[in-house]
Length: 132
Image 1 (cartoon, rainbow, N blue to C red):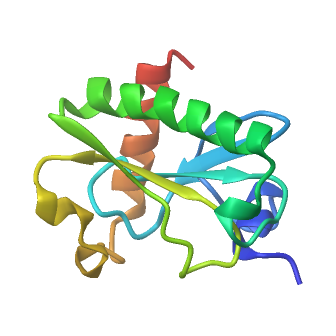
Image 2: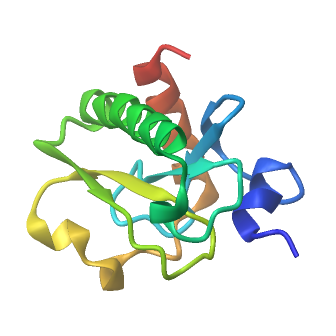
């Protein structure tokens, strides 16, 4: 069965996309650590990021870097967090989010009850910062 991320990428489940190319998609998470929390996901289902071909891993990081810059512009955060955890979904992905303090890296603080309207606003902010 396809991972939840593949289902989102393929349009079988809804997603708020900030980036899409032939190798990678990036979309807002529905349980953000901070507003603008984006997941950068290779289209290819690879469970462990260390099994990604080096060129794909480099592309994932380049997209994460671009999105990180957009997040800083959109939210004015002093830092942008980047985490590769890999336990919650068996499909490699990078968490990229505005970070204001170390506590923002605590996944126990993720907000699973964000109104759709706020996620829609976050999408617009990030797209504007990306120049989309």
